[in-house]
Image (tube, rainbow, N blue to C red):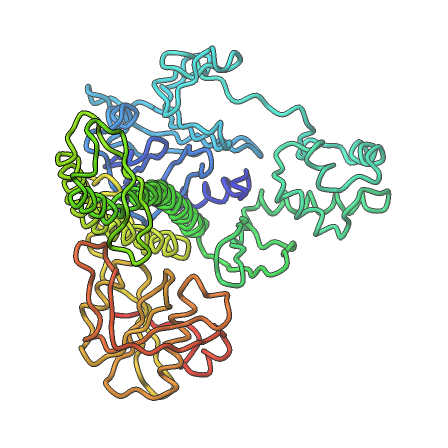
Length: 591
């Protein structure tokens, strides 16, 4: 993702038009994230929000329409900006040629009513990105650092210290050739020495201020992928043509998207290079493009982070549950000896006169068996034969009670295992919104700690299962996680049909209507199989029954049910076959 000097220059042009020419005034400052600052401007006819980010993976500066939740206590850098910049207006923007550094010069009014200057500096350089507030320049043009979003002490960088009350020094320049000061003949000499090398590598090694994307673009426009005597003049020509377009501010903001519309890359111009399976989406505003692109990236990161959190926690609890199941099975095995304890007690009671005192064991015939096999019964020598018999009866009663208790706990443990397996399956196949629902579900169940504050989006999110319409007009609803499965069942009519893949994690599917057709039943079964762990298998068994025959398991997690009066269909998930049974391949949004 190339937030390069060309993109920064394109953004600077937009900021000049919308913030300087409209004489917009800075009225509010927020820092919703450690590396993110929002500046709210009030213009003559419209308000604008400028986003500045020093995030290692999402550094940038652009106007945004998004809303961010602010922390209860403003960070120190935010308070510093409020102190010096509230009420200020931008007088000029300064970007060194082909550098990813933008100086925003503010006109400020001090406490005495006099005017002064402060500079907010945005350095967009991946993990070295920073936002720095500078004081007015002195007589020598040097500026004192007032503060930075990311402090850089001497022990981290001996060359360049970024701390309050230190003189600001710009980032060191690259030891490469500046394209705007490069002689044509010298360029040809350099190209001759690099003959046979990829054009992209040659440009990145020799020319300052070019990102990999720009280097690939120059190569694509020149029509050559390797450096040669014939290619060198064309490479020079296309490089300077691109630079000329930038100097004249001829921009065409363009986003590169996958065929499904997911943003993959972007540029400040319409690129000639177009990877396979990519489509170009033009934008009128570079800020709008960046806002959309970074929003998608943030959603993707949040989705992946949520997914990993849920998978990690669910897997840990699943491992604990399986260990608990193993231990309970062992305990149950011991408890199942209850009948043996009872038999020993009965035999001892029947042969009290034949048992010697202080014996460690005794062999007695099993009178309750036709063959009357001899049984060896261990004894406690310190007890009398009668007391030994009573001891076995006591062990029998205890084992009997234990067996019932362990059986109940084992059933609960197996329900927990089944629930956690369904959570793992749902998390693997869910989008961001469904993952938020799963997290809330795990918080309610105690598998995740409850958060003190939830986002407005989570509070206001409606219940939205997948909704399909068959060719005959019947409605089919598909839950996307346990919580949706639970709500889906609660909202269904008693005569609706309920579907679920047999003995495996998967979605609850509801086919609305008391008398659906065979094609609708088949479509619902295909959806149940496709939204289950057997989605890539053949002959998946799918049980279906009336909703009135489905009951929630007491004490179990959301979506855990038992059912009766069911039938079983064996289906093989097939998109083409399913598409023929539905109106359109994609589900409709459930309102």
